[in-house]
Image 1 (tube, each protein chain N blue to C red):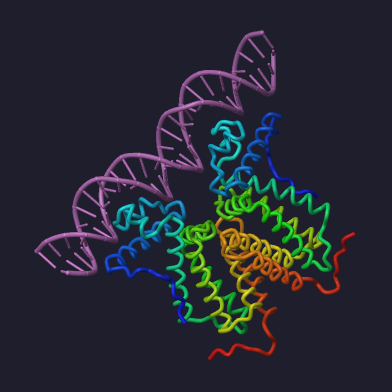
Image 2: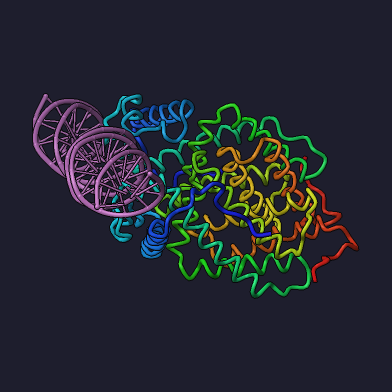
Length: 207
Length: 207
DNA sequence: GCTAAGTCTGAAACTTGTTCTAGATTAGCG
DNA sequence: CGCTAATCTAGAACAAGTTTCAGACTTAGC
């Protein structure tokens, strides 16, 4: 039911788990201040109270660190959303509402959003597993909003396109090339794809 | 009619124009070999036969350089496409065909694609004007394929979403998280939005 | 408690993007 | 031609991500 994040994490000790959390916390904190550039590995290490080498043992690159930070934040969001699910009439509305809620959360911490999203789209192949985890989490959130347990391939395509739009629209907003209103329009526009792929007469069986 | 690229370029001399071209050529060459990482400013400068300081006078950062490289390549593509426009029945087909043609071009130089696309999405506010130019060029290419001179706001939204999908799908392909087939499906999926925004009975007035 | 293996620390070193400087070259102009 | 301002060159210097290493500390097994 729940998406398992780490495939073969070799069981960290308590102190190691604490270190990991301190690192992620420091990362998010620094990112919240000044975005991607403000997350400097030496500063993260110092703020987390670990040596630079240790930081690199936990997260093999700055990109890995920030993608893990995003994973963390997304998990929070997912939990929050499950507590208060979107209330829209049809699937498209609920997905749009969900994404707009996430967007508003990001607007509260635009620098953090900058660091996480830039890392996510800049990641190369060496970060693929971690980026994939983020992607699966995002997919899960969207499917939740749609109220689907067993989506058709067509619906999965629509969800992928929605994710593409979501990431890229965030990028344009973060770099100041699109307004908040424009991001909203883009999200609503792409969500119309959901109506296209909905099989008529087959409503959500969600209780 | 044609999109003007440089707003206030202070009229380069012939030797300067030649230098600029040598730099862009070196950039594309190095990018073709090894992607984003292989474009090292010192190497670009050496390959182009200019001093490092000069390179930075022409392009104030590696990102600026790669975005300019993309601008260059897109201009080629636009010219090519105008010579052999897509032949599909309706607008959605023509746009999908156009993007797939561009995609095949990128597949021939995957490393170059990597460098350009990663730079484009990683660019921060300081590169906004240049990224915007690329975006306008892309929009022009898509509108050409649709055969529209005066798109409605709704249609522009669809085009923006298509661009979002295009960029983000490329990213997933470049980082090995999506197959060529999947990119094709995503493009075709998002192009269905065009049908949604087409006003019935109002066909292209293209001669 | 003792020891071997693994982990963490502190610090230096290396890489590549970026900046800076002093002197040489070039362009435009009288 | 000779002057002046702008541009270009070579190279050092700096910044931040990443790697490396010797020695101190933890952990697990005995």
